[in-house]
Amino acid sequence: MKIPVDRVRRALASYEPATLPVEEVRHAAVAIVLVEGESGAEVLLIERARHEGDPWSGHMAFPGGRVDPCDADGRAAAERETLEEVGLSLADARLIGRLDDKRGNPRTHPELVISAYVYHAPDPGELVTNHEVEEAFWFPLGGLLDPARHVHYTGRGELEYPGILVGAPDRHVVWGLTYSFLETFFTAAGSPLPNRWTEEMRRYARHLGVRS
Image (cartoon, rainbow, N blue to C red; front, side, top):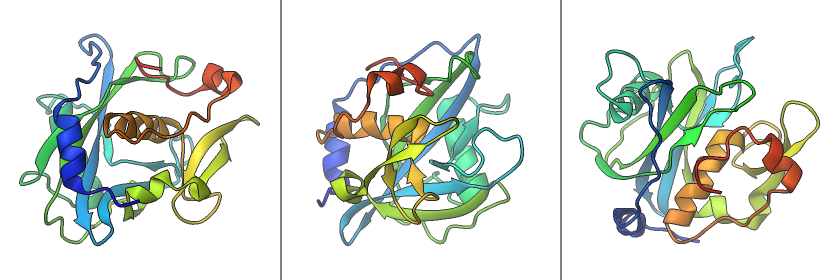
């Protein structure tokens, strides 16, 4: 399925994200960066480096991280983290939308809110990863909707979560927070992902966001 960047831009222009207060909580932000490829829009994904004790070690994700005191807001943090993690400056990129804020896992990160900003980068250049990132690559946006790529991923414990295979099996699987943001993204873009959640999955999901 080919999804042009312009279609996403037009859809997000009328989308009103549900935001959460961040004044008294820890705040993080991610950048969902799109480029126009031969098969339509492509999205930037990273595989986080593996570090002992890191709860997101090895996860597939969007570039991003916590909002530091030096950041004016979540958007500034997302742009700074993208530059630090993959060497991509978003200074000349176009901000085309924002998604619903997500709450952190109530069991492990109850005082955390994560925001997501969507960009179109017309000329991203070569990606240069830092020590926080194992690998970074562009993936066709339409490919994320391919049912053949929809798999289940076993996270911590034995419970399986909905995931999307974007590379090597059992390694490059989008799940958890990133999958949750993709659900919101595709709903806003008019091509929602199928509802693959069971009640048990929902109960133990890392983040349900402010819209179900």
